[in-house]
Image 1 (cartoon, rainbow, N blue to C red):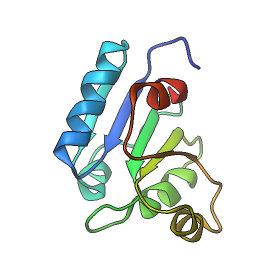
Image 2: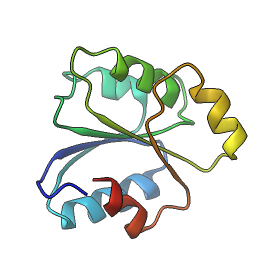
Image 3: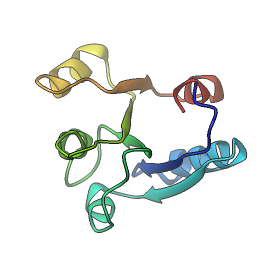
Length: 117
């Protein structure tokens, strides 16, 4: 577990999940920024290598896998955490060929998230 505050970018299309993550992570002392889709995330400056990105694998438009692929191609990629409610086989198929990020299954809970940041 990291002991320092980091900026956490949340790329999640479900406002309830996004808001819950923002509250939880803010209460843990982290700066949070939420994006409803990959396109809005890409419109901003790339994250720094010290940031953490939490990305839903099933996003409308550009998928979470597309976000992960883009992040992993950065010169100094940030920490990546994928979130999903999909079965394990679907997760493995989507992430095939990528450096597998940390994956947290939905429904999310405080313990699973706190362990990753």
